[in-house]
Length: 175
Image (cartoon, rainbow, N blue to C red; front, side, top):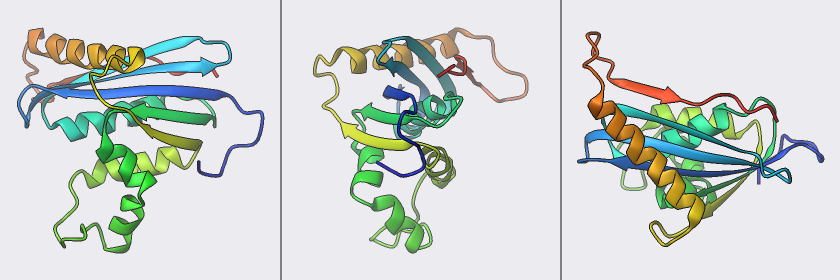
């Protein structure tokens, strides 16, 4: 957990997942947010025309955290070891120390999203939890359904003349 949230602040669980058809290819992200103890839930999703699975995994968490209207205690549950290990194993801090290079001296991918995720997670006390994907975890399966459905909706949309080719759906949380 990170500092920055006082005791008594709202507590939220975020179940996040990304899905890509091809890597790179069209992708979607989905997140299920649950306020504790009320159990009120919100679903968020979005898609991009040309992306990677890792970007979708990151965007699911980013959009979920961005939807919180105030600092919270947050438990992020994801099947993305990439996301969890960046915080739990200190990869993110190491990448920053190494000027956004991996231990193998190659450039870190998705720096734009890592910077955004770092900034958003600093507003909350975050606990990062990894779970095995497609293992029957109800909320993870729902996040996956949201991501896949968003990717399919993108495929069925008319082409964007500006070339953007993406969307996101959902709203800010009131807790």
